[in-house]
Structure formats: C-alpha cells, structure tokens
Image (cartoon, rainbow, N blue to C red; front, top):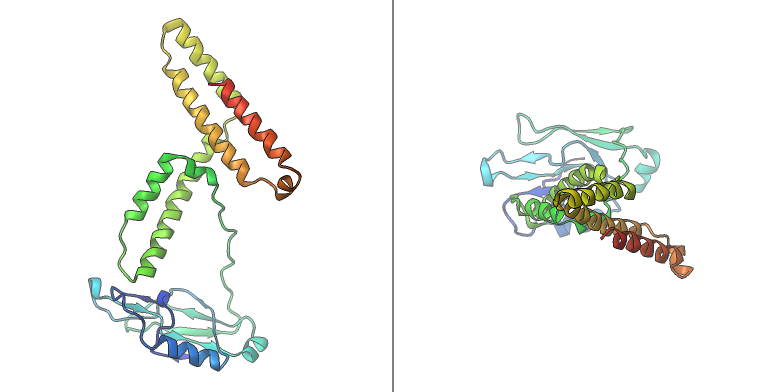
Length: 238
C-alpha cells in the first residue's frame, strides 16, 4: 500500500497527453505474476495532481493498495477510502478492513421507443457535441455519460405522455372532427392524428422490446396479435 508512482490503466489518468502510459505493461505483469489484486476504493478516483492550471493540469491514481487471495479470504470487506486532494499534491488514502461501500442502485433501463422520436435524436446529437479535455478514452466515456443523463431526463419527462390511453385519443379525435365540421378548423384533428401515429409507433417498439422469448418459440402468436391490433387501431384513427 502506498505511492506506486505508476498509472495502471488509461481510466486512471486525466490529461491532455494522449500518448500511451509508460510502464503500465510491466506494472500489470508484475502484479499478475505475484497474484495481487487491486483493493477496491471509495471516494474520488484520482489521488495525485500536478497542481498546474488549465490544459496542463494532470490527475492520476497512483496511490493504491494491493492484496493477495489469502488476504481477501481473511478480510473480505477490505477497502480503501480516498480523501480529496487538499494542501499537497497527493490525497490521503486509508485502509479499512470493514469498509461499507455504496450499494449499487438498480440500473435504469432505457426503452427502445425513445429512439423513434426525432426530438430525442437531436438531444443525443447536441449532448455528444460537448467537448471534454483528456485522453480519447476518457472523452468518449464522458460523452456517453452526458448522453445517458440527457436521454434519461427526457424519457422521464415523456412518461406522462406515454401513459395516455387510446380512449384519450378517441375523445380528442372526436372533438377535432366536430370542430372541423362545425367551424371548418381541422387543426386539432390533424395534430391529434399525428400524435396517434407517433404513439402507435412508440408502443409497437416498446412491446417488441419486452416480448418474451417463448412467444417466438410458440410461433410469435402473441406479438402477431398485438401488432395487428396496434395496426388496426392506428388505421382506424387515420
């Protein structure tokens, strides 16, 4: 445990320098040959900073602790706590034999139907254009994280609209048709009709994503019935 002065992986370094990490291969070979495992940590990722400003600033994780298989069998809850970098260029790290780690939350599952909306595609493009500084792998990771956050926020807001039922659309279409007949204004009917088409396409993608494998084994009976029903509803409202 201590300052190894060696970065092990690209994700352990944040820098404008895109060159390969010198010494990483030899360090990993030494660790594997000695059957040592990196002890998990909790807290900020980086433990060292060169304290320069702007693009010249470099962050690295070079302070770590390694343990053997025998060590983990005796202390299975061993962990390292990283503290923030404060007065010095290194951050303090602390070995804890009973470290309580953050319980991972259930991952958010994104519905495939979000990609049927041009609005969502535009959000993805705008989020991806945002520039980060660092190694190529770090830039891609940050871009993916930014896209995921923006799409998740948009999808959660869209849920209220997805909860609408076909009966709601029927009522709006009847109002739109009545308005078109009485006053010659078909804007409400046209707008609602477009929403029905969009809703039907999204619903089809949503249920296709959740189709059970056994349905396919049994001849796709359920999915065929459902898609024919959606097609019939969409056709009836067009």
